[in-house]
Image (cartoon, rainbow, N blue to C red):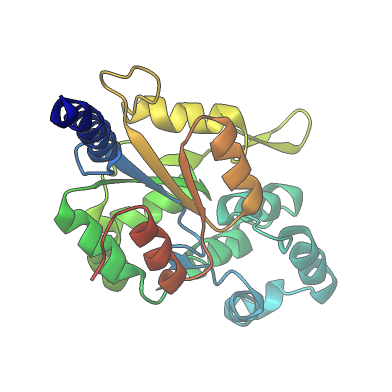
Length: 257
């Protein structure tokens, strides 16, 4: 009788333990139930659209077209934080009526380098079987230029982009409104519409439990992290450097050598 009384709580404890273990297993982030959304600038690629690029653009510009007052206006109009190259090109081409200088900015500005440590992380996630997608505020034209010219940027292509599913990259399209003489654009991070479109176009379902995917979103801008969380993305990681990202992913149960 005493043995039966003792066995009951032990059996109950075993059942509870098995249930908890099953929950942990089902909650594990695996290539089958998890996808990644990566920002590009300053996460995968160092954004070098700065004084050096402008200086080189000015030097490269035909001397007879240089009017220093105009150049200073252009720099002031396009050097705000995170101004995409597509937007800068439209400002220069339309607002300042200078397509030659705009083209110089466009093509010099696309020469960039990878963020240290990221090629190894991206390659490892790909080899584990995780699907990797792009979610960036880069201009569509600029991004297409990046991924369609592997011979021009072999380091970027070989170390980063070839591991991504680039069928439907989430970018921002900028256009010039000739009536209002202003720049218009499609949805941008951290807007809810941006994240909803990124998930939808890549067939990532976060609602239906039978087909739900865990989403790990990685970005260096805190406002974008908050936007992703509001859109229902369950793992939003603020990026500072590759070493911290390794630690963050390891804490989520995704081992990186």
